[in-house]
Amino acid sequence: MTLIQAVLFMGAIPLLVGYLFGSINFGVVVSRLLYHEDIRTKGSGNAGTTNILRTYGKKAAALTLAGDMLKGVAAVVLCRWAGALLTGGVEVNGVYAGYLAAIGAVCGHLWPVWFGFKGGKGVAVAAGAILASEPAVLLALAVVFFSIAFASRIVSLASVTVAVLYPIFTGLYSWYAGRDILFTTLCALIMGVLVIWMHRANIQRLMNGTEYRFGEKKK
Image 1: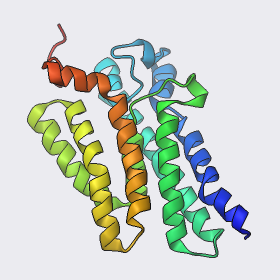
Image 2 (image 1 turned 135 degrees about the horizontal axis):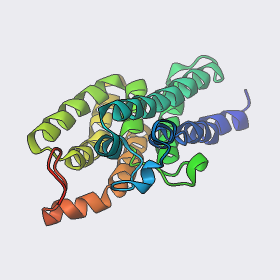
Image 3 (image 1 turned 45 degrees about the vertical axis):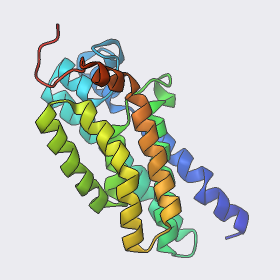
């Protein structure tokens, strides 16, 4: 494998593969197939699990969550395997290719090419990508997420908090695992910033004290 080929694979190709996987937005798919509607015209207009749950209920939300997580898993696993294989079986190269695929998958979910570049907020697909890349990091983030979500009943607060913590936890885990801390933390930071940016309206409502709490009736 030439240097140019290695650079292309370790850079552009994982990002593209992740983006194409991420562009399969299951919120839109589920709402169209089961209800003949577009979830982006309902509720908050977001194509994510939370809006699906509020609009259509638990079954649709479970299908959406599973699909969005699985596409993150698939993108990372495929690029991780191919990255190691095409660089002479070097496993760490596969790990780094997986991180790039994770960024691509989140971008695809936020701006899906198949659905007019209007998608969700990236939490579920990011969770799937983290599960495939660093399960221990996802476990730590899940503890924080559910603790905050159950205590506050504000999903957006839990989502933003874990997005902030993700690069920190990734850096600590990379140090423990002997990986390139700068590269992995930077990738995690990019994903975290993307998720936080997509929650900017929620952050404003949190600051104003008007953010929706799960289970309350809308006024």
